[in-house]
Image (cartoon, rainbow, N blue to C red):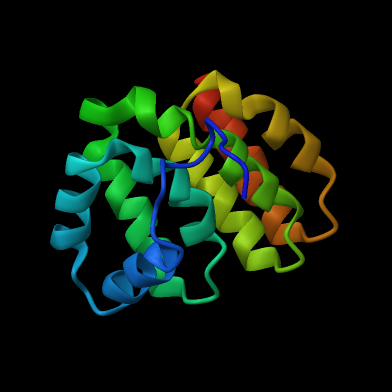
Length: 139
């Protein structure tokens, strides 16, 4: 694996699955503390949002809601990783990714969201549309 500015330096390979397992088990406070101590972990938000377990995706949203004010600049760096999930095969992953982009609230998410306005799934289209409206101040 080559060095990339888009991933934390030398994270353990099992870090995303360990974080997801802890989120599913309800240890959100512990995960929040981890992210506070290593803001590079925010780049793993896309992987967490791609998890098939709804509780993990909900935990990722709660994590962002909790840390958005203090770590907004670090969270924004995860937008490309979350945005690419708008093309995931699973509609629930696409809708949840759109919702999280709305929680983040950065204009950097608009290109990903506008591309998803024509999604084949009605729920995804509705979530994307509502997210864009909310972010634009028209919702």
